Image 1 (cartoon, rainbow, N blue to C red):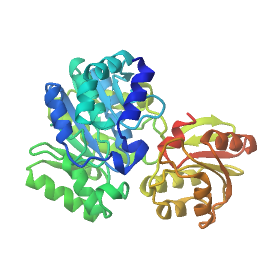
Image 2: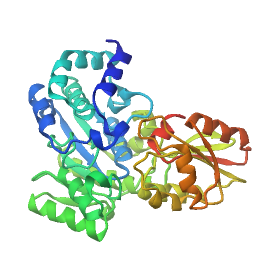
Image 3: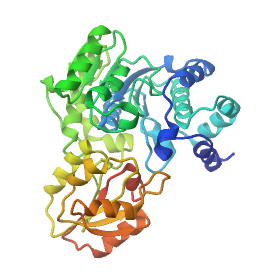
Image 4: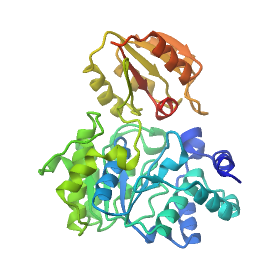
Length: 405
């Protein structure tokens, strides 16, 4: 198989949560543990940082990777989902995994994957861990895919665990209260391994303290961080919170003898995009008209992104909006401004919500506009109408942003 055929096989043969939803979610680690044994336990051959959270875990992971790269380390970075190319998920010092490595890995182990009916995610975690082990990375930043306790990445024993925040998302799998979701995320806290917690509520803080106390794990809260705070090239207002989480995590790593100085931190935070290739976080795609895209896709993330949108200056606001069908529209649609022209669209994935359905539901909240059968058509329509003094915001789903960057 060539690279395209290899990816087509991976996507088509194996259910994947990002494309299909509930049918791809497996609620145990049995397959991943068996795969790790089959591959001779690659996860034990490199140091790691494990990052979970409802929002901000991707940005936090990229920031940590960038700072460690600036400190001279060979750094693996595993994140999901990808925006344009599957290889974005697995990087070393910002460079995407080689196509040939993916082809060879899948070809070599395909019979095992088919025999054991591994999910897309389990297989991809095995690929990433093997790649990092064989490449002899000094440390890898591993972002949780979904939840924490039962996520395929949760076979590592990291230097430090990080939980950015807790919001209501993926409630079908993780529970429908902040406390229940916090318990799932807290599943990455390992006995005797320190944990850094980003934003908390009274309800979630109690869960984290209880889990850390039971496992005799030192617990640190980003809110208690008292050191110098640095700027980042990631410009979303929500990054201020993530930066403090990163800085607190770096303090913990330094206590574990990782050599990171203030200059490394400053350069790392200022060079996240250049060092790691991160896309889609309050990304400015055009200036006249100003086009902003952001991957925020739940009420917690959208509330912050849309608040920042209010601070923009414009004559008219155009919003290209698409979502996936399991999204809590009653929770997110009231957050969007009524004074905007909407371009409703369906992201090109199986679980994308029909654009007409989205338009109908949005109208109940006073959001008006037209519907388009693709993201591209919606975006082009907005560009044709907008003047130099207007702003276009593209979002609602990672998959919408992926189609226009």
